[in-house]
Length: 95
Image (cartoon, rainbow, N blue to C red; front, side, top):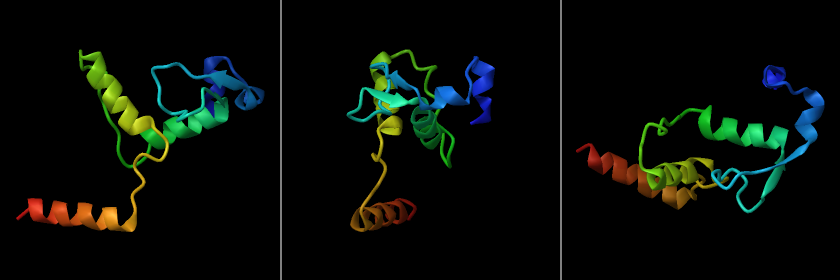
């Protein structure tokens, strides 16, 4: 998290709690989080194996829907049975 200095912050700011805007879903049911948790959750949503570009979409409702699907904590965690069903559907779709 050494990049916080670029934004005029320092390491002590990482423990400060910040109120989350209503335009984000990273807080789940929480309305405020420490900065280090905000950064961690955003990195999990946007800096892992998959990314998404959607801000060019002019429809705000569509942008919010996409943001909700990527930012809500735990939304992409599936049970073993759900994973098997998804795999079967993907295999079937390629035939």
